[in-house]
Amino acid sequence: MTQYPNPAQLAATLGQPLGHSDWMVVSQDMIDRFAELTGDRQWIHVDIERARREAPGGTTIAHGYLTLSLLGVLQPQIYSVTCRSILNYGLNKMRFLSPVPAGARVRLSETIKDAQQIAGGWRIAAEATLEVEGAAKPAYVAEIVFQYYD
Image (cartoon, rainbow, N blue to C red; front, side, top):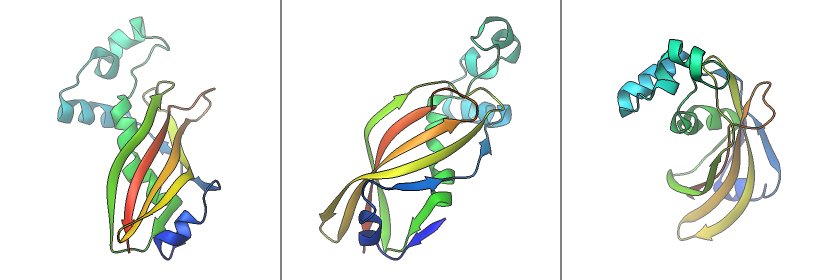
């Protein structure tokens, strides 16, 4: 994990890969708890027997938004920034490219794509890619935006 002493130092990495998080297992228990919290109990996520019979790949898959929410766990394994506060500004673009089967291992990588000074800090956009171990395509590629205040 890289520690940036201020947002300007993170902005200076524009275009450079920042590295990878550790691998993390997306368990059926995580999927079930996410389904319970969100009310999204579609069979493809929670019905193991039906998924075995009917789903492509024969297994349940994680909710796309569950995989996106893993940013909060995986991103700090790649880098952190010393600053007064950080605001999640949103997404410029988000594409789910392949499913994450229950039990799969995933990891995050990031590259800074844009950095703009704003009043009191920086607005920084990063391309975040969630890789699924052994899969041909990543689970998603998203352009995430945070505002870092000095």
